[in-house]
Length: 257
Ligand code: SAH
Image 1 (cartoon, rainbow, N blue to C red):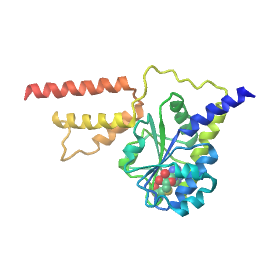
Image 2 (image 1 turned 60 degrees about the horizontal axis):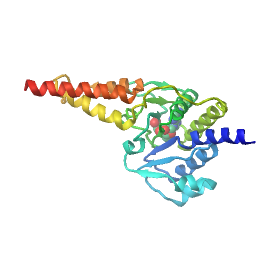
Image 3 (image 1 turned 120 degrees about the vertical axis):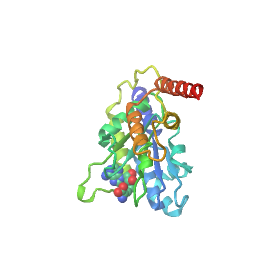
Image 4 (image 1 turned 60 degrees about the vertical axis):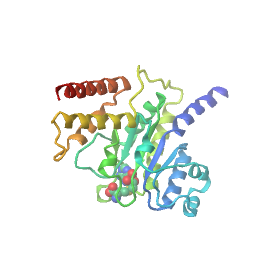
């Protein structure tokens, strides 16, 4: 049945390339557990940011028949490298933070991830350390936060279990889309994590030059601006307009000086 096979292919391709990023995992057994959870659900793209121990026999043992996903993991030094090029970055977190960020449930999150992925650009889901999760700086690199609605009495899941829940929701969503056209009608590619990072650096520098931002007392200006720009899902054209406007402000300041 060729038709069914090609639908299954499309589904597999969408899922396979969704990036799972683990930040500074402490227990290598969990990395193996994550590889298995991913492969069970058809995900293959594992990224490790400064893992304490990799490769490790404990990880291979826990990965069981998912050693291909485990061995194929990409190891990088920073989160920025792991999310470079991604048009949607979702951070997972069990608890609320000081500055609230747009939060979705796993099901809605899977929908958004597949929408953007279907548009052809990479997407990532980021998971934190076993002992203290993701820090604020890391969470502020994300467009969106997702919380698995666990019991508030004990809300923190084991890392591999959290990946399992997210991967399962992604698979359910992909299955629900079988046969449905995955085309997203947008005229421009979305800005990526690294495009946004450069915008933030430029924005901050110009705000300081203007005397609008006091570097001695930055307060929460940049986290708030990151939240604003991050949740807007701006495209590259919109981002270039902002960068162009900042550059014009820089020029005007220089002419005045
Ligand atoms: N003690 C840490 C939790 C670490 S659990 C904290 O309080 O933040 C390890 C990772 O599993 C988390 O960083 C997150 O990526 C994921 N995780 C665990 N429970 C989760 C939940 N309820 N919702 C979303 N992600 C969760």
